[in-house]
Image (cartoon, each protein chain N blue to C red):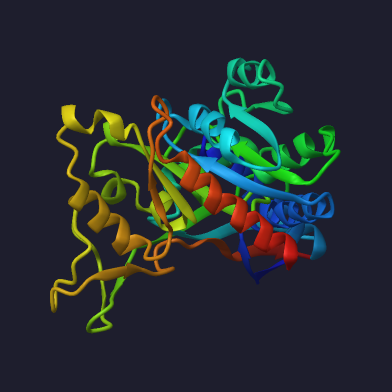
Length: 114
Length: 220
C-alpha cells in the first residue's frame, strides 16, 4: 500500500508534463534515496497498472538509487554507515545525517511530441 | 513526432507539502498548535496523550489516525476531548490531504493544541509533513534500545521524544546508553522525557515543554 499513492503522484506529475507539451510519456526517470522509504521494485509494480489509460501508458520507469551518507562531525568526510553504528570509518568520529539518500523526485521525463 | 527530454526535478511529495502548508495556515488562523504524534503500534500514543492532557493548561483537540476502527477516538470522547477519526483503510500513514479534510470538518472554538495521532508505525509517518508545527515521537523501553539504529528517520525528524514505559526498566535489558548514543547521532537537540503511561511519571515536564513551545509559536 505504501508505494501505491506515490505511484499515483508520479503518474499525475508526468501526465501533466506531457499534457503541457501535447505529447506522450515514453520514460520517467526517478531518483530514489534508500532512506526515502520507497522501494523501486514496488513502484514499478504499481506503475504499469496505474499508468493505463493515462499519457504514461506504455512508458518505462527508470530508477536511480542513492545510497545514504552521513557526515563525520570530526573530519567532515561523508561515509555509508554500517549496521548498528553511526561511527566514521576514517577517524572514529560521530556521524550526523545528511540529505544524501533521502531523495525522492522525478528527474526528467522523455516525451514524444508532435 | 520527435522525442524531447523534460527537466522536471519535482519532488514527489510537493503536492502533499503544498496541502500541508494550507493545513498549517488554517490551523494558525484558529490559534492551533499542531503536534504530529508518531510511534509504533502499542507504544502508548493514546495513553500518552491522555496523560499529557492532565497537565496542559489550554484546550486540547485530537485527530486519531488508524487503519481501521475508532476505538481511540471513542475513548477520548468519553473523556470529553474533542476528537475526530481518520481511517486510512490500509495506508500506513496519514498524509496532508487526509488531515486537510479532517481539520476542516472540526470545530476549533478556542485556541489550543491539536494532537494528530499518526497510524502506529515507526517508518512512514516520518517521511511526510501533514501541517504540523512539531513531530512528537513516542518510543517505549519495551520496543528495544536498538530502535534509533533500525528506524533512523523517525528519530532524526522528531522535535521532542517521550521514552515511555520506564516503570518496566527493572524487568528489561533495555540499554539506555546504546539507545541515547544512537539517538544523539541522529538528533542532537530534541529533548527526551522519560515517562510512564501507567504511573503518569514524567508527563508534567513534557507537558510543560509542549505548552511553552505552543506559546512561543503563538507569539511569532
